[in-house]
Image (tube, rainbow, N blue to C red; front, side, top):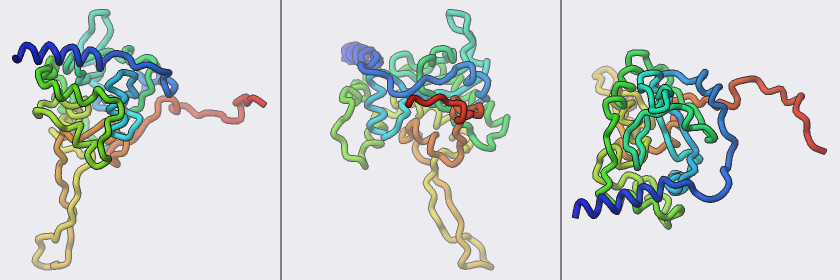
Length: 251
């Protein structure tokens, strides 16, 4: 039975990773500029063009369907001799390092963790590099089948929870789960749940304090890095000053 489920899962993963039909919605990022802007532990958001991308974008109500972590030159070299500077969790290929050139033609955005120390940035990178080779459990066919409908009839409050369904392995959810776990390993916030509680101070009975609760890593989606107040957003296309007065408009 395990072999049968794994075979079905492999076929589903291959189908979902195929390119979707239709035109690509947004202009592609300049990879040369991206390479100059990226710093260790930056999160790169991708607007994908695969079948699975449409379902993720619908369920998360976001432009972004994929997230990868920039690891600098620590990802090794691929079969074509390119330096692998990014790490992702891919449905079909598992956790892998890949070259920035593979993102050619995609709409991209950089999310940079504010105030992350160089030591913790290195620990975040160590975390994802230690997961290289982890595979998506293709026996859990439901994890893949939920993406077959690009716009599943799921009520708004349940959409994020639908993405978290599975056996709990980080590569069984979408890519952002692995990246979220890496930042949680050093205590860096993404979108914590904040409660206001009375402070334990004998001389101030009315003092209040904020208590931060870590969300479960399986509940994070790519857009969370975009909207998080702890990450600054960098648009590669706006890395230089645009002289709007020099633009030539059609009459």
